Length: 324
Image (cartoon, rainbow, N blue to C red):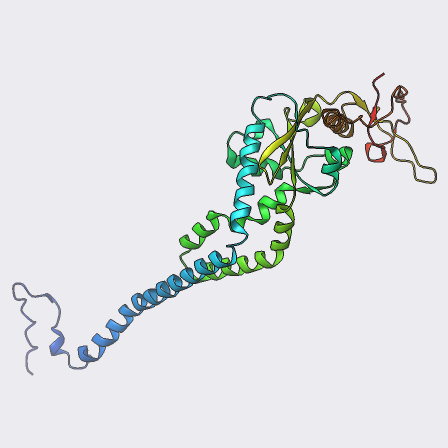
């Protein structure tokens, strides 16, 4: 019986110390580098080639979208940006120190009532820089000023919001988009806004007057309110008026045959939104040289009782001047 073969001797520097060399194991498959090397090269190069292709597609789409934006907004963009800048600049000036009442001799209440005005309302504590004007205009507080003044209004906040795609920030978003999916979404958004909002923007931009109300307190009824009227085509102020808003009392009434509104815990007075805003509207009329709306020598407000009270503010009529 023959003796077993001697174990392999480990040579110094051998990479397979303690192991049988691969060439002595014929049953193991041999790696065919001539086949696998090209395969590995393709696998490794595919992400790089795909990424370059996607970058090229994104670059071409970005350039096309920038050209389309420039062409489609060429007629509307400059006018919109000019009006928006004027609104932000004048609103920032309006929240500063009040310079006093002013009336341009060419302005009349009939002029303001012929067509809708562009209207916005801000509060002094909300505006410190021009970029904060839009956010303050978006706040929807109870507001009866235009109703008491008797003018039809279009909201300035709609002009600012619907025209955002005409600003340089939209172009910056296109330039910063890194994927074709994002660029396709921006293009669809541009086309949608042009179809939906172009008519609205043109209607707002055609307004002759901008009416801006500025509340000096955090709540309009807690302080004075300023009213500025600007001639938009001429880019100048034509009226300034200010009122504390406490000289008008709203007298509730009920129309025959209509349901009775729920009772109030306290009577309506100058602290109500309607009373305050109608008082400010009367200050505007006085500045315009027009007699304020209301009724002189109005009766005293009814005293609230435990089981009932005056009618609600929603059912109240127009503001009534209760001064003697």
